[in-house]
Image 1 (spheres, rainbow, N blue to C red):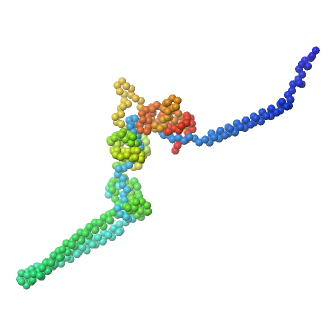
Image 2: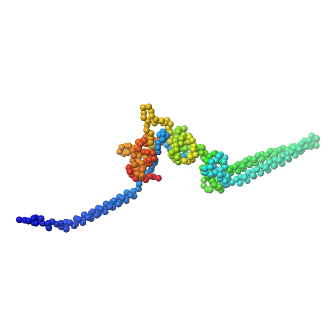
Image 3: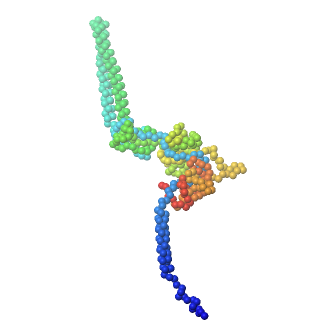
Length: 419
C-alpha cells in the first residue's frame, strides 16, 4: 500500500538550466533594443516637429461695408496728383547766389524763389546803355552842324538871286544839308538798335531772378547756394536743372488705372468715394473728371482722373488712395418694397482671393488668422465689388483673413504672417 509521500514527491519538480537561461537572456536584449529604437524614433520626430518651418501666409483685414460700398461698381487704387506741378528752372546757365524757396512755403505768382549771379549780365547791360548814350550824343552834334549847313544854304540862295553866287555853290550847300539830315536819321536808328540791345541785356539780368510761375506750395528744394544751374544739363555732372518744385494745391486730384475690362462701368461725372491710405476711416466724396482716351497696352489699363468735391489740407500730393466707383441707380435698391422684405445688408468686405470652396460640401469658406493659428470658417457671400466680395455672416470687421490660401491649409495649423 502506497503512502501520500510517494504520490507527491516535490523533488522531481524542477527546471533545468538549459531550458531557463538562454531564453531569459535573449528576451532582455530584445526588450532593450526595442526601447532604444523607440527613443531614437521619438527624438527624431520631436526634432523635425520643432524645426519644421511654419507656413507663411498673406493676410488682409476685413473691412466694414458701408452703404456707399454696397452700391460700388468697381474698386481701384492710385495716387493723389496735381494737375499743375512745375519744377521751376532757370532760363540761363549761372551760379545760384540766393535761394528763398523752402519746403512747405506757400508762394504767390511772381514771388522770387532764387537769384542767380548776374554780374556778367549787368556788364552787358551797362555796355548797351553806353552805346545808346554815345549814339544820342552824336545826334546832338549832327543837329548843330545841320543848323549851320541850313544857314549856309540860305546865304547861298540869297547871293544866287543877287547874281554874285553860282548855282554850283548852292547845290553844294544843299547837298551838305541833306547829308546831315540823313546822318541824323541813321544815328537815330542806331539809338533804336542800342535800345533793343538794352532790352536784351535787361532780360538777361531779369533771367537771373527765378520767380514762381503760379500760386502754390513749394514741395521740393532742388538747388543750393553756390551750385550751377542750367536749363540744358539733362542730368549728370554737377549742374542742377531745377531750383524748386511748386504744386498748385487747388488742382489736386486722384489718378487711377482701371482694368480695360471694367472701363465700361466708368463715366464722366460718376460719383466716387476716395479713401486715403493715411486716413482709412475718412471717406472723401469725389467724382470722375475725365477718362483718358487711350489704353496702356503693357498693363491693359485705362487712366482715369478723379476730382475731389472739396479739398482739404490733409490731402497731399503723391498720397496713396483707394477709390470706389459708385452706382447711384442702385441707391435704395435694398429698401423695403410693398409686400417684400428688405434685403440684409452685408457686414464686411473681403478680397475674393480669400474665399475657397470646401471640397466635401461645396460651401464657401475662409481662413482667419488668430493667435498665429488659422481658423476655418464658413461664410455667406453676397455680390462682388471689384476685387472684393460682400460677406453677410461668418466674418467680423477687422478679422485677418488669409489671401490666396495655399493648398493643404487646415484648421488649427500654425502659420506665420507675411510681412
